[in-house]
Image (cartoon, rainbow, N blue to C red; front, side, top):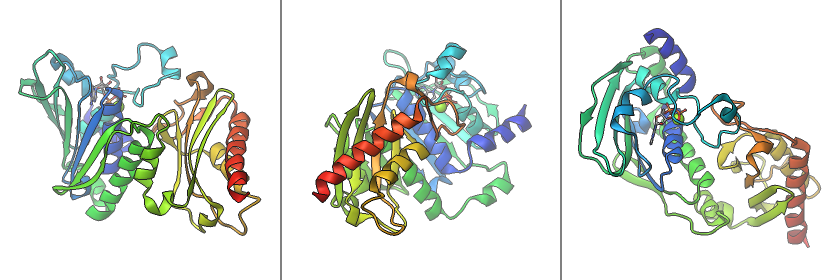
Length: 324
Ligand code: ADP
Ligand code: MG
């Protein structure tokens, strides 16, 4: 039903950046090794994500645009340890309800196909030439919901949010090659980071201004791997703009980890200064619940005090070595 799907869509897709995040998640879930993002007018003109992943079989294209259609979960039990980024089958349906969407896809060994939908109306599946993989283009977000379209900010602001989403994906997936185009200009490009620890990618995304004042960290504490870059105490700021937490390849907000880091700095930082850091935390999937937040931006640790301690300990060790 069109109204219900428009309401539901508003919760999933708020702006171009949230559409971009969902499209990137899908590309990553599809096993992409390279992803190209093209935006026009901060994504308000269009958001396009092209991947070289597994593709969608032609006969499944309409299904991909239906609510609660997901190919990623076989049963409820699996929902709880979903390693995939998507698992609710809502994102593409939500986009189809509030924009014009086109999917062109090809599975290796099959013919390419295309489907288009607009304001919830699906068109026919048509054969088309295509590279293996998938290209989704979202045009005119909220064209049928003028009140929501009015909520969007300037193209520059929407672009900045999209670029943040893109950078978070780049940090969380160092082995992916990623490009971001905006209004016909190549804005960001990250080659595949061949290093096993992913710290080169971190440095590339966060830039010289951060990494020149950062300390590398890699630690294994019980079942937990903690890697990342943490700032030298002298690089702490009143307002820290670099605070990234990635858990099992998801960029998340997490108080346990954030507090663990702050606790480690507490003795060396004076006043209300904030540490800057980017931490990649990996742990077995049964020790973390990823299915707690609709935007998938939070996780729940089975044993959060163990995670807190491990993070605090790992960061303290690096700081102690640096301070001497
Ligand atoms: P979810 O990701 O939660 O399954 P989505 O609405 O985001 O739901 O996507 C619906 C389905 O469409 C996915 O389960 C997947 O089968 C297919 N799909 C979407 N994007 C891609 C892609 N880039 N490559 C391959 N399959 C895709
Ligand atoms: Mg998805």
